[in-house]
Each structure stands twice: as C-alpha cells, then as structure tokens.
Length: 198
Image (cartoon, rainbow, N blue to C red; front, side):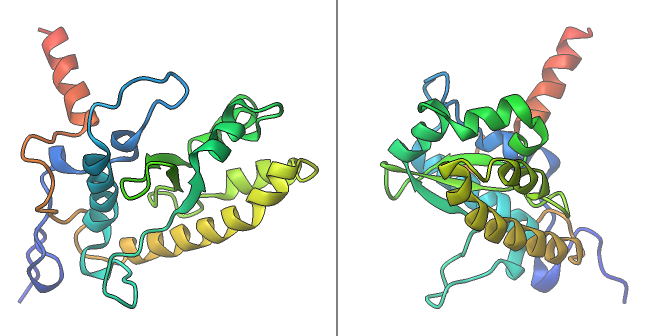
C-alpha cells in the first residue's frame, strides 16, 4: 500500500503550513533591546518545535530520553561582548559576512536566564560553512580562535541532521505543544501583503 503523503513514520502527520516554525520565528532583538513578543518558556518551546517538526521520531535523544538539540550554550555577558565589546567578532560578522550571520539563530535559555543558545537552522546542507570561513579569516582574534572549534562541531551536527531530515517522508510533522494561536511570521507577512493588495 502506498504511503499517505501527509503521514510520516508511526502515524506522524504533516504540520499545517502556517504552524511550521522557521528560524525567523526564533529571532530575538538583542541589539535593539526590544521586548520579546513571547515569554522565554514559549521561545524555548518554539526552539524545540523547530527541530521536532523536521525530525519527528528521528530527533536525537539523550541517555535520559530527553530531546537533544544542536546548540552552543554561552553566558549572556560573553555573548554581549561578541556583539558590543572592544573588538566584537559577532558584530563584525554582520558587517563583513552577511551569509555567515544568516546561518545562526539566537535563543534565550528558558532554564538559565543568564545564558543564550546559539544554534543553526538545518535547511541548508552546508550550513556553517560561511561562518567557518569568516572565523578562519579571524583566527588571529581571541574570540575567533575560541569559536572556531565549537562552530565546526555545531555545523557538523546540523549538517548531519539536515541529511536525516531530507530522508524523511514528511518535511514537517505536527508538534502538538505549540501555542494554540501560533502562526509563523511567513504566513502573517503573506496575510498582510494580501490585505495591502486589496
């Protein structure tokens, strides 16, 4: 019997397009100091949903059967130094290599308000390569030397997850714990454009 295209492994069902979490739904304006539109707990839930929707039952687990997400956990003060310090390499990335900057998203840690999670989307099979190229050019910078090995490890993990995701029958599976009213930014933008075009 042919597989229903809306079903994945073991009864997984496809997520509705407007409910798919994309990297921009996890964006946090650390530079502007704006108030996030969702709580830290909700943002952590969106972070989990991003990977769960793509990997479903193939999502890696820890030895305690908890979801294992690819991320670098850094102290918030250190991350602000990457953005605002005397020679901020993360801010330089935005100026000198926008393709590298676009490979990242930053998520507040709901478990530890003093930390942030640095992670990468898994849509791109070569995610992380632009960042590694930029950091390699900055290998004389102490922050660059510090970030190169962890960036390489994170990029490798996310590339492996991309391959796992692309091998699944359904690109986005339902994540039932999303807030009832969640609609992704892409859908909201399309809705606004449709209203403006009337």
